[in-house]
Image (cartoon, rainbow over all chains, first blue to last red; front, side):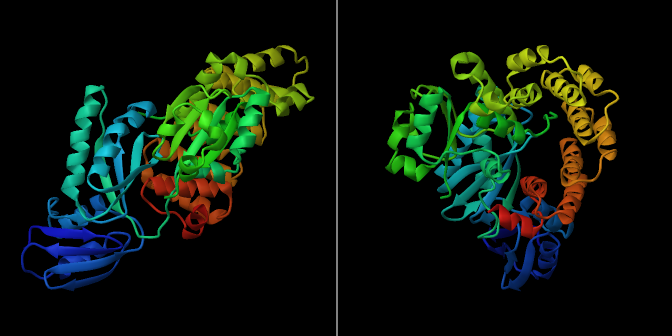
Length: 213
Length: 245
């Protein structure tokens, strides 16, 4: 029985095996994870497509049940990724502050990192698009090392899961998009007019800078 | 930690009634800041999303990279409290002729003092007044008082307020019991899933939200349910998630 494997993930995921062996069992285990489809096994390698977010935790569990062990050092992931961290119940501001440490650390790996969502249970989702492959261990190390800075401030967070996202899949579902969807906020899109209105009505300005890039 | 229920609608009301809300793209800010140039520290904005709250003069009052609705509401209320000269009824509020309409708008703007002043001037007793008084008590964290105001009231509005009061008090069983009494509208279905979600019962939340989406795919409450499912790492109905892009 093989005990480890390398996972190379993108829109198409490739499992590279550390040793020789039949990948049929791994393919079957991977297919049991929602979002995995079109598995193809080859010479020490297993490929599959991702048609919706694939949770690494779920993949690890499924592979584990089939007798496989995920080798984090050799598990290479490619963009786009969704990283979930748990703020351990800290308040929202604390979580946001800690991301001053976490986001730059992720970007230092090469690629763009941005906050996707802060859910009401204080779990934070970060969209990370590494330029090249990044190993699962690298992500875990970045979380742990950046956490040291947050701990100095009396805060902390833990890595919950990493999901591999299908390219071109739902994106930018950040909460400000929800605000737009709920139809609610009467956004001013002309800065000149908005500032003039704020002056005339003597109201505070709420400016949201967004980006789709 | 058990977080308070989501309050996006509260945030929307607060922004519309007491702020001038501007949404602008990062690239536009960097290349052509225009009138926004006056806002302090905006020139150091290199990433998005970011939020700036400033006086009309441009003096920065608050800045964050990202925030959830509950913490943002708290911050915006704090900004208004510390700058009373900027906190005054909107044109919409001033135009409302009926006291109850003005009261409702004051509550939506989270202006407690104004709401209390309006209540003091209302003579007539009505179900709507009781509901609005319950809302004020809920906002102040007085669950028992809020429930007393709703005592004996029927109807959808009173029922939804009763659910909100129980959710605000984190009395999940009572909130679910109050929901059961209401007709299964998209909002009610969404709230059922939300209560499960806030109790960390993700499987039940996803199950309830899936049913909510199936029942009314195009309803805004279903969009919200789909968005929440996405936050859990589970994609909702593809038709709905498509329309979220």
